[in-house]
Image (cartoon, rainbow, N blue to C red):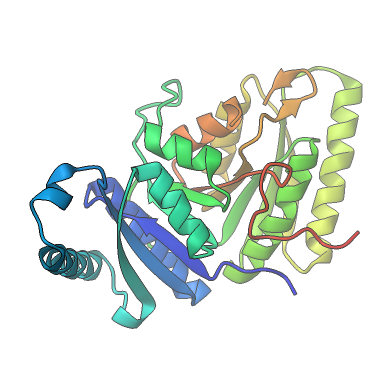
Length: 291
């Protein structure tokens, strides 16, 4: 049985960017029909917490914080109380988010990130960058107000690495859940017939693999001067709704395609990006099929 996305963890700090993540998780969950946990992290090292409040006062404060979180969720989404949980946790922000994801066996973390004014500014919030790089489960990042439409078109940038092949399995599982099609794009900058031949053969295999599993799919070879700009333009032109990448240092055989390509995509993409840590680093929620 294929794994599925059934539990989304959404960190919130009541900023605009956390609203984006919350709204997007709610929209995804309309299709996924799973569960959402909304997480707010407070500083566990703050001496005021332990020295100036009794245990009863801390419990009362936590209850009030949870009530505030529920009002926040209701203010920005149409989620019913039965569809989400609120969780207050103490500790260091990034560590606590990732530890909570593990403890809850979350399928993915959904979070808003800082915005970049243009793709030449490789900007992403430090906290978001660390979570994307180190999380053991997939991380979906979004930088702006989510669209009112469902995810119908997933963009899958592809190279010839083992990690790139692995994310194809994840993309198929996600596309089936969301009833979406997959557009595979192989962007290349090297004018080398052997490189192009290998990349083309690999893309054909990937497209066939996806189509054989009942997901509508097409492939595009894209000659570009810059891979990031080329893929971003492809997403815009083809009206992509989500991008799926791996966070390893990908290679276009010679030049590097978190890696710099992943960081640039998370920073600059106008549409949500799902980042997946390669399986040789962590065991992620999706399993490779038996060979």
